[in-house]
Each structure stands twice: as structure tokens, then as C-alpha cells.
Image 1 (cartoon, one colour):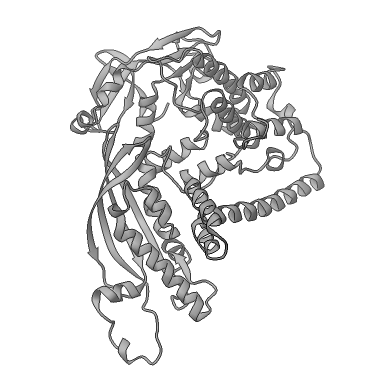
Image 2 (cartoon, helix red, strand yellow; image 1 turned 180 degrees about the horizontal axis):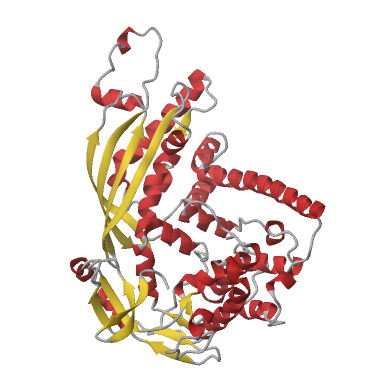
Length: 508
């Protein structure tokens, strides 16, 4: 099981613990004790169920963090098995058990038993690794769904990487049977292709790829894969159909029937042998697909991201009717933080600096005045970069700070460098409706902005031609954030900042 979900001895017996990663005082403030009242569910292979109840809270001796515990369950994470390339045959059977168990779970939902944590990360199965234990009391294939809030707490405690790893299975907008089918599709993709279908770099981009159905078709990712299986997996992960379109996503029972038509059929039987030329042709086709997809996706997202600017330009040309239509479209396409955890909201806000995406920054705030100075700075840098391109005929006038550093810090005569590096996010308090988060980072801004704060650099007034000052790591910032949960979304309500100005003209 996960390192934060583990068996340990308590009062002479083995129990299952969920480490909240919170000290006693913070645990009490977060009111996590209420999680103890929520039940989990154990689903046997024959469809019988058993309620799992927590037993209490104890303090972990090595970290002094609070652990919510309950009866022991000898199992391992479904996700761990699905991801193991050496266990692909077992993984396919585990998926069958998981689908059956989720279907059973759906029939039992009520006020007491809330939906489980979606995807394979929120489920644990009695596997071959545990079935031979002498204290085994559960048959092979028994699945345990811990209470949703306990799994969510352990995921949040793992930080940004843990959140991204868990989000790759879960569609942000689907529930019930549709969510089960989508997750099953992502697991089938992983089993047969050996990689995840959604591999973008941030949780926000992964969610966007899922919404738009952006992934490489299985038959291109794994040459020789059965075409019918490839099409079936693709349908399970298809985007939500637009109004008027027919739904394509198969039901969980249809997926289970498809992969269980011959229960003993090995994974290798879904593959056919290909010649070297055939494999080379498919690889070339995948490269062409990736290029075409990248162009289409980037173009579409660029248009969506800059809808406001485009519509504003059209307003001056067309009519009042065009303004009205543009306003409606703008409201519908505005970004939001729906489905994001507090950590994701904070990460999105600070990453948006380097993207010059002030609209996404505004979406992370309860009110624009909370981050007014940050948004103004981003807008000013955007304007500065466009001015340099216009007056100096520079092809590349802007570069994100991390990209600049990773590129070996190239000459600053033809670029404007801006953005955040060394971002460190630490949760101080996590409640149901409020969270406190400590953030530290290094903000890189154009030397022009430093000059405005410190006065002109030496000898600048003697230059015949204007030379942009060098980019400098302007400030080491330490922000204390307060986030609130309103209208089903986490957003930043307060930013308290301590900033230490660094030398503006040091040798970089």
C-alpha cells in the first residue's frame, strides 16, 4: 500500500493507518476527526459487501503526525498493479475485479456511503502477493474502497506530484458509470500500451487533455494491438459529446463483457506480430499524428485563451450584435478552478506568471484586488514584450524564466525573461472550507522594472542608444496564502507577502 497508508501495531493488534501528515494541533484545527464517522466498503468477488469503519486516531511515533486507523486489510493498491509492466496478466484480471466492485458500489450509494475516491488510486485489492498470507481472511480479488475523504487527505499530503499522478486516471467532469468507464479505459491503455494516455506536465493540462480527448490512439502507441480493442479503449476515453452528438462511451458492464469474453485470454493474444517495415510505418504514422494533433490543439487553445482580445478587435469592426455575442462567448470560455485542490490552485496561480496568463490568475482569486499588483505586473510585461517585437523586429521577445535557465541562460539582448522558479508549496492548515498555505519562490523580472524601483543603472544616461537592462532575479518572495472554498471552488482570498530584493545587476 501507499507509504501513507500502511499496517502497524496498536495495542497489540495490527491495524490499517491513514497518515494525515498533520501534527496534533493542526489536525484539531482542520476538524479531520469528523472523517472517522465515514464508512468504507469491502466488496467480495461474489458481489457480497462489508462495511469498514475507522477505529480512532493515534500519533505516529517517528513523524509525530496524526494517523486515522481502522481494521487491517491485507492488500495493495490497484494502481500499483496496473502500472507494473511485469504483472500485465494479473493487471487485466485486477481490472475486471475493480469494474465489478465499482458497479456493486454504485448500487449502494446513499447518505451514509458516499462515492469512493475515483480511479484505481482509491482502491486496494487482495492480490497474489497477499493471498498466501497465513492470516488471510479475504479471498483473492476482494477490493477495499476506503472512505473518500481519507484517500483525498493522503493524496493532498503527497503534494503536487501525487495529485498529478492520481489525476491521470480521473476525468474532471464525469460521475457514476461514465467515470468508471473512463477510468477503465485509462487502465486498459496503460496495460496494453505500457504508458499512460495523458502525460502532460501539470494537473490542469491533463484535465484539459481529458476534456478534449487528446491522446495518441492505442493502435499507434502499440503497433500490432488488436484494432477492435484499440477502438474500444478510445471510445471509453472519448470526450464528452457536444449537444446533438450521439454518446460513444461504453458502459462499465459493456467493457467488462468485452475484456471477459474469454477470461483466460492472455494479454499477448490481443497482439499480432508485425514485420519491421510495418512497425516503421506505424511509428511514422504516429509521428505525423502527433504533429497534426499538436498544431490543431495548440491553435484551438490559443484561440480560446485569447478569445477576449480577438472579440475586442472584432467589436471595433462589426456591430453591437457582434459585441453581445462576443461577451457571451467570453463568459463561457473564462477559466476557473472547478475541480482543483488548494495546492493545484496555488500552483496554477504562480505558474501563470510565466505564461503571462492574467485571466487564469484572476480565476484563482476571490477578487482581483487580492492579487492586483501581480496581475498589473504580468500585463505590463506582456505589453513590454509586444513593444520590443514591434520596434526592434525581434522574432522571440519573451522567454519564461525556467526555460531561460534550462537553456543555459542565453544572451538577454534579444529576449525578455520573466516568471517564477524554485516554487515551494507547503500546507499549513487544510479544512473543509479554508486552507492556509506557505509559498516561497524566486521571481525573475525584466531589468526595466528593477530600474524603476532603484533608479537608472550607472552610465545609462550616457548611452546614445537604449540598451535594455539585464534580467535579474528581482526578489525572493515568501507568501502566506489563505484560500476559501466558495461556489464549489477553491480560490485565494488573501496574500501576505514578504519580499527581499536581490542585486539587480549582478553577474548572472
